[in-house]
Image (cartoon, rainbow, N blue to C red; front, side, top):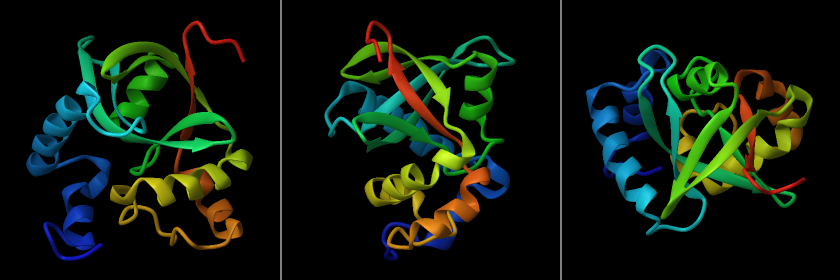
Amino acid sequence: MGRWPFSDDDLRKMYAGGRGDATARRFARFWAAVQGVGLFPRRWVTLEVVGRRSGRLTRFPLGMADWQGEWYLVSMLGENCNWVRNVHAADGQATIRHGRARACRLVPVPIDQRAPILKRYLQKVPGARPHLPVDRHAPLAEFEEIAARYPAFRVEFAGRSR
């Protein structure tokens, strides 16, 4: 990614320790509102999940990866980021907002199945590229090496049978 508006190093610093700094939180609030309205392509969504400590609804702007006819959410910051911990605490129950709210369940993807999803994620969600230590064009074997560090969830929308 180029220098404008932020370099890759700047973006990584915004999320040092797996938690966004004040600038990252401001951007997240803005993008959660914009993406939730549904103005961008379908992959750009706002995840709404109950906070594990506060009990209040929290919103996170995320990009989804499509793979083999399913949609997936991936944590570019790893297992300990806030939305992943909230999803685990909520037993996967969440809402995806893109113009309208759709109840869903986020199902963890086993580590041995994550590599192609991580690769697709990096191909489609450019903002995640500075945070994962693999190039989006790398062979699948390199994604297999990091798969345990980056959780992925299959999005199962309510009312849709598999």
